[in-house]
Amino acid sequence: MNSSVIRTLSNTKQHYQKQITSSQYQLQQLLSNCTNLTHLQQTHSFMLKTSLDQNDINLSRFIHKSASLNFPNYSYSIFTSNHNRPLPIFVYNNVIWALSSSNPTRAVSLFNVVRSFELSFDSYSLPYVMKAIVSLNDVVLGKQVHCVGIVTGLDCYLSVVSSIIQMYYCCCNDVVSARKMFDDDGFGKNGSVWNAMIAAYAKVGDVCNARKLFDSMPQMDKDVISWTTLISGYTQTHNPNEAIKLFRRMQLENVKPDEIAILAVLSACADLGALHLGEWIHNYIEKHKLNKFVPIYNSLIDMYAKSGNIHKALQLFENMKHKTIITWTTMITGLALHGLGKEAIHIFSCMEKEGRVKPTEVTFIAVLSACSHVGLVELGRDYFTSMRSRYGIEPKIEHYGCMIDLLGRAGHLQEAKELVLRMPFEPNAAIWGSLLAASTRCGDAELAEEALRHLTVLEPGHSGNYSLLSNTYASLGRWSESREARKVMRDAGVEKMPGVSFIEVNSRVFEFIAGDKSSIYFVDIFDILHNLDLQIKIQTH
Image (cartoon, rainbow, N blue to C red; front, side, top):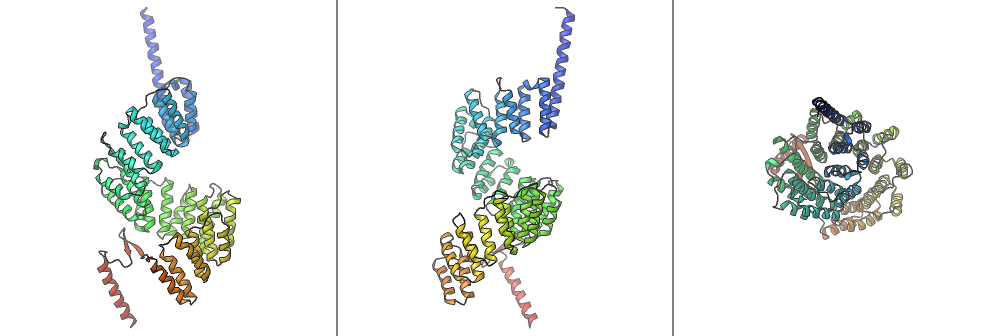
């Protein structure tokens, strides 16, 4: 061949390779800067023009990017338009991942298509389809995929093990099967496997075993997810003191909390009313620029409201540019909690006028509770009716409970009782408890007796119900019946629950139980109370 021809061909090849390299670089830049559907469509056009869509790796990256920007259907449409040629497993994996949350049924169907093609799965295939199975809550299907993992030998990969553990506890709370996977000696364990098992215990409320596992976990494997999972477990099982203690230890070990950890510990602060610690966390959020994360600000509003600083909660609310329905509902609930019913109704009216979000079932519980706190009976009736007529929300038993409480507090006992008879649900303990409290306030012993008869079946160990009936008789001067109610309580073996109080000192929360002499502070507290008593007696004489 002529040397000049060879040089021409060589130059042409080099020029073509440079074009490919340049186009590939442009594609990478375009993908990294995509933020919306228009950007994705423009990038796809560029891929078609340069034929880069025929490269499976490029196609896979584009599908992943589309899904990560929350356009899974667009990802799937791109996939189907290229499905007329053989595709490697990693392309299918990305499509299954893209569909796993938005359309899990289709994700599982695609997984079965891959099986029919006899393509070899890899260590990503099973975790992605397991995510879809968790969304479907289908443990039978999960077990079938577990069997696929055993047959293919993929169950020795740690990512697969973690996904199988997650499937068992998410789909059916089967911690025993999850633990069998965890205890299998056929593989080593990494942080993700430990975290999955800790999460399994936390989900079913077994924080004791979750803590044991956490404490036995190798230090090098503990990451922010490990700490956060356990903190969230304590919060969800109503053990806020332990959640806060663990958060403090997390700080001492220089583990930087993420948004999920912050949300969990803010919830614990709200439960305890730990205002100073909540303020410290607020400062931490501002310092580390987490203030763009809307759920964190929703939790801050909740924390301030429950910790007594409703003005700070309102200030945060008013300064938020992007308010979700959770933001509005949290603020309405906080105002109602402080007895500021009219202010809560005003916030709800502002939300309706703004029209950006629509109230939910929870929002109406907050609104009806606000009406109940300030006795706005007519307005409460209107809101209860508008739930169905204006917003298409069918009232649930919680909404009926709010209305019965509202009517009972306002003294409309007969109307409250009629509403109980009309509602399409069997009355629960909360409903009868509202009637018992209302009848006690109004001195209606007959209705109180009826309510207590139901409560002794629904809540046989609740001492407060007997006390309310006893107080009703006492207020009517029916002392023998009052004593009889107390006797029935004793004979039934129902013990009065001791009072519990919390106090925050130097960002530490201390719990005190009435009659508990086992506290290490008991002697000191007794001495201080004794001295105060003496000083009061001296000053009054």
